[in-house]
Image (cartoon, rainbow, N blue to C red; front, side, top):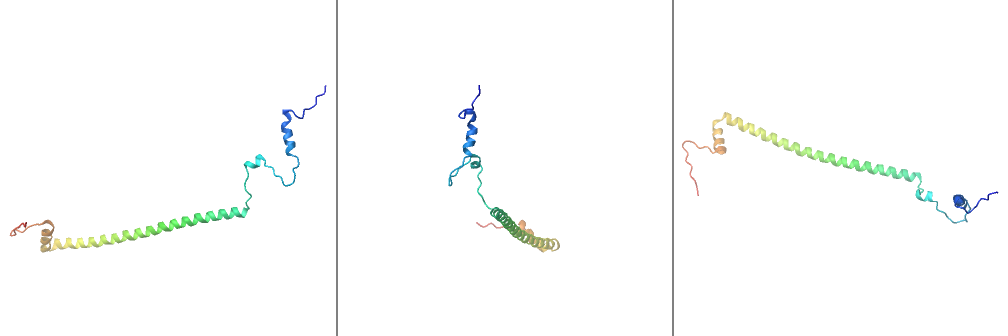
Length: 131
C-alpha cells in the first residue's frame, strides 16, 4: 500500500510555515520577522558615529584639562601661602637670635628681660598690691 503524505499533519507544520513566509506579499505591506525585531538597530551613517566619538573624546579631554588647571592653580596659591609663612618665621627667628645675643652680651638687657618675662624683683624693690 502506498502512503500519501498528509499535508495537514503536525510533522509538516514547520514546512508549511516556511512556505507561507516565502509567499509574495502585496506592495506596501510590512512583516516583522522575530529574529530582526530583537536585534533592530537604527541605521545611522558612519560619519555620525565618528562625530559622536570625536565629540566625546574632545569633551573628556577638555574636562581633564580644566581639572588639571584648577589643581595647578590651587597648588600655586598654596605654595604662595606657605612661602610667605616661611619668610615670616625666618624674620621672627632673626629677631629672636638678636634678642638672645643682646641678653647674653648686655647685662642691663638681661635684667630687663628677666623682670619683664619672669617678674624677677631686685633686692631693694617692694611689691605693693592694689585692690
